[in-house]
Image (cartoon, rainbow, N blue to C red; front, side, top):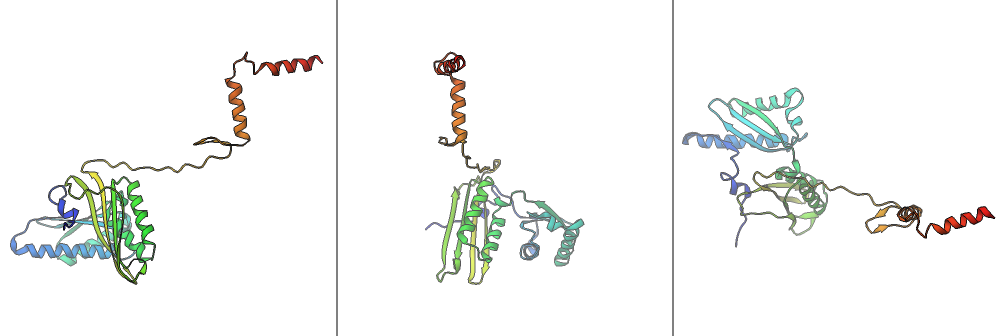
Length: 274
């Protein structure tokens, strides 16, 4: 029976880069690896699990000989940076105390949060924690991603949905999700919603097209219904305005010497003579 692999790990090193970039001897490899995980856990606890939430989707770490460079990808950079850079300076000091190394922190804004699987998963988990309808929530975020330019979206929620006695799995899918194409830009994330009935697992796939393609958002404009007397999609509707419009069109299209205009002229002449 075939199993689905992680789209991130499947493409890492082929079409996706690494989230940690550094070289270390065998004696320091384990220490650096644990340090990276501590940095990511600390950033996640500070900006994604406590208020105000900074919506940090990815933490990239680059180690040089002299310092550790931490890059945060956030949908709310203003909260992460803080007024006059106070919050980011505080975070840098806390990470230096955590790692006992010199740390520099950079923040990059995520311009399309609806196309980021991590942020979508966190938003769904937050809504399910507030006892929102899981079907409506899944459909809402699928439509938001498709409107932002995604080629396909799939969301799976597993657990005691809506407080049911037996756990089950629900899936919402729009568009296509290629799982074996290495050239396909598929974003994937896992999130957990903590509810009073237990934990609900959330998986999100977002297909953004081929690598290098530009996304074109699909703008759906809502048209107002035609008013009384206006021409609708199936032709003119009833009302005084439509009748006047029809009369104006018929008189304008009739020739000057047509028989339709002759009776009116004759009737006017008879009235003047009498």
